[in-house]
View: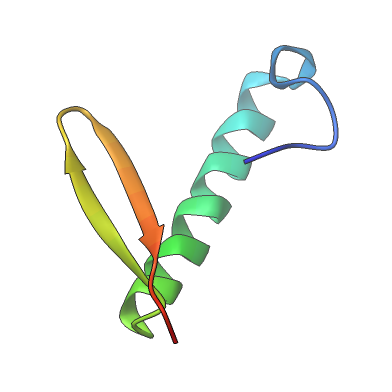
Length: 51
């Protein structure tokens, strides 16, 4: 995922908001069956599914 500026340049509150919004979009795509969550230890990875 890319951002419109460096992650280090974002204030902590904006980092949290950006990460939360990205997670919400990924959850919505998961519910719609367009992506699936991949087990990967402490990280959360998603994979696009064929439509």
